[in-house]
Image (cartoon, rainbow, N blue to C red):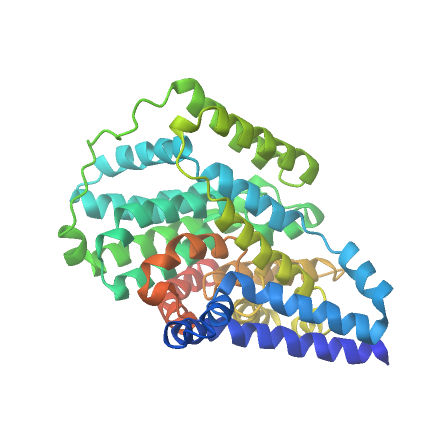
Length: 420
């Protein structure tokens, strides 16, 4: 009986957290109006804090209903590898040498396009970088793309409409751009080993469709805002101000990035590499900007809260998934992804024995298709949100406007992954 009560309490708290996510902008506006309680309202307006706060309430409720020992045991049994990995990969990928290396590649590719510089750079940032996520992992690709978009476009006074459209396309393209391989996208990673999905399978069943959708989305938003883009000056031949970064520093950073990616499932190793990286970055701090430790920790806190809250949602999520036919499963997974992490959905699907192949495909394709609809839909989204949010009005991203902006690129992903 106590467990049944806890399940309903956990579900209620989970949906309170989702509601809180959509109303975070309201608390931010309150913070600007109410100076006496501005600090509290500002805290409640930080989307990265939302799930951590409600997860804390869940643990307190669990302690009251089941007892302190049960609450502690529940926390001990949670797997926090993904939040810690996202923290590590954000800090390393956002370092100056790696960002400059990525910028150089994007500039080179942009020069090959018969477009104005600003349009070409924007197009490559929203297409090539998300697809790169299939190899360097989605969180790393999100970090690099968000930093480039922030520095080259968001900080140069583009319209709020263009900012939301760009964010929507970025989130969707990162979500589907990581499915060329079986190890880079969290929802694919959850099932690839058990279902025997290798690189060849991913490329033939998911990869080419996702690449097509990524390209269509990037081209569409580029030409939709071509007037604004043409007014921006982007010099593809410009040398970086800090072009004196030694080659060995850049190579060392790339090796640290590769090490974190390779050992993404071994927290003791990648956190050790992160500590070594921090030491190296400190030793050569003249070649560094400020490392995004605060932003990375906030994103990790967000994802850790999602792990704690999401662990108590299996009882209703699995019932919903099992009640659907193959068409309902695809569109149901796409919709459910908006209110829960897409990796959680595919993980639940992996627990069902004897699932037909078309159901397996529908579940994963639906999960990645809906990965851009909200901040919580895909694990890398909070990373991009954290980097770009300060460039939006009131330094907040309204969840309803993000959802509206993500719907058109999501429709493209649905057409590509389900109807082709």
